[in-house]
Structures are given as structure tokens and as C-alpha cells.
Length: 158
Image (cartoon, rainbow, N blue to C red; front, side, top):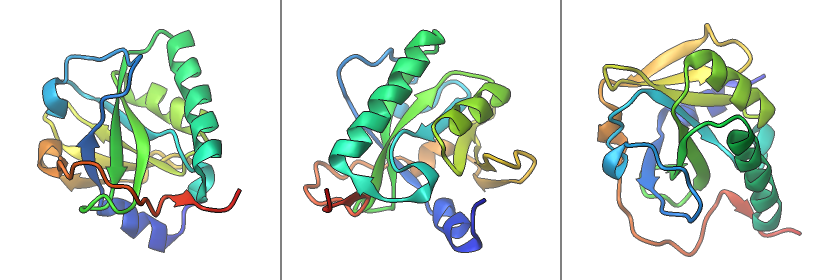
């Protein structure tokens, strides 16, 4: 279950394009979200902060699942406006019911959907009827902050 404080934090999301190798890039040129789909974090399951090493393992498993299911995806960072806290995420071309399934498989508390009109929605993974529109155009939540060395979404503990 997702608590109210975390739900409010999730409302403040921004995205930054991320060019990692081996992505099956859908045609969402420059992350302008030309298609509808879901944005799902592949880091920090259950809203807990893990080490970079553990997050890499979580991401690898999530990507294998996407490839196995034949889903097209691209990488992006999801985080706060200044990307001091950012999690590796994927933009997946899929319908909402598939997005719910993927978010549950990755043990995420919530995920985002970009609808056909380009609006960004926050959806509770375990109560998908609990959703809120974040903004009219998801492209307004794209930032380009360059590379940041520190990341509050990664624990320094091993």
C-alpha cells in the first residue's frame, strides 16, 4: 500500500531522457511521448531505497521480462525537478492493463501513464482505479539536467 506522503511526492515527478544501450526504442522522439504508454521505475521496489548494485539487478530482471514479453521500451530517469533524486525507469508502449501487470511484477507502488492526448497520469499499482492526472501534457515534465554524480535514490549502504 502507498502512503499519502509518498503519493504526494510522486505527483512532483519529472523525467529526463536517458540513452542506455540495448533499449528497444519506440518512436517517442526525444522523449516527447508521441505515443501513449506507461512509465515504470525499474529501481527501488516497494518504495524502498536500495544500493546501486541491487538496483542494477532489479533493472536487469525488469528488462529481461520486457524483452521476453516482446514489449518495446526506452529508458528515462524519473525524479524530482532537479534530478537530485532519480530512478531509472522505462517508457513502455503498452495498454493500461499491461502496465498494471508490469508495475506489480516490478513491485512498484505506483506508475505513470501517458494517455493518447498526451496527459500524464499517476496510478496506484494495487488500486488502479485510484489515479490522478498530474498534468495536461507529459512533455512539460521533461527536463535536461545533464549528468549528476550524486543521487539520493541510491543507498550508500551495501
